[in-house]
Length: 149
Image 1 (cartoon, rainbow, N blue to C red):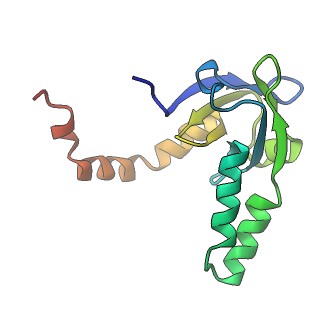
Image 2 (image 1 turned 45 degrees about the horizontal axis):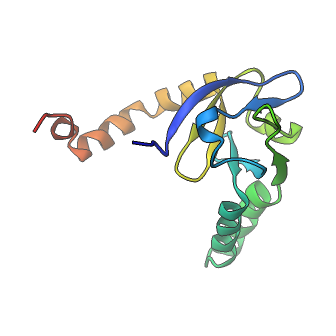
């Protein structure tokens, strides 16, 4: 079974590069788009996913104020980066600053996007939302999910 999700620890080097985990590189290779993510992280997408993101934005019926905010935060901050031969991408300084990336990072893959977080900030983010996550898990009926059948 291949997981399309997961996370790995990484480190920001002195040139502002982060290593993309080997298991994610088959999908995330060549030219990639990086922009500000939600909650002070960086988002990395393939050009195809970026195009879908842009089209969803342009086809939306969002009020003008929300459109301008999303455009300024995500679309106008986007830059093209390339996975180098060592499997790293350079995080642009403006995005490093926004995501508070200094050294220890975590690279998280959902199905179609990478999120790059400062490790400590991600742990704080999760801790701050622990009660909400617990309630959501209870709604899933987690006790039944993990019982042998």
